[in-house]
Length: 134
Image (cartoon, rainbow, N blue to C red; front, side, top):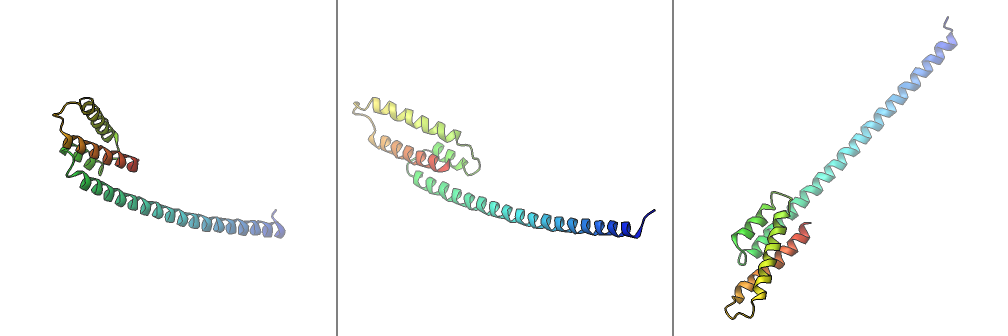
């Protein structure tokens, strides 16, 4: 048989549990709000990074325009879309190899100094960009 004391104890227990559930709900809502704020900050930072990346790519393309071949321009432009720098690395290695070959035959009076200068400048810009990008 249930007594008045046990009814009261049971009622007190239910009220206590209801308060706990309410408090947990409040904490959950607060944590959810904090999580949403963190997500907004992360998205804002990513948007800023994307804008800075676009500006840097545009700046590099502007520097390369009078110097580089269309292939170099194409590789740099592709970085607007992709995060993969493998093609840029391969291009840099190719330019280094070309410069080494030209340097090996520098005793040749027919070497095109202008072409050599353009290659060196292009390489310097691309290496700087690669360090920035990564």
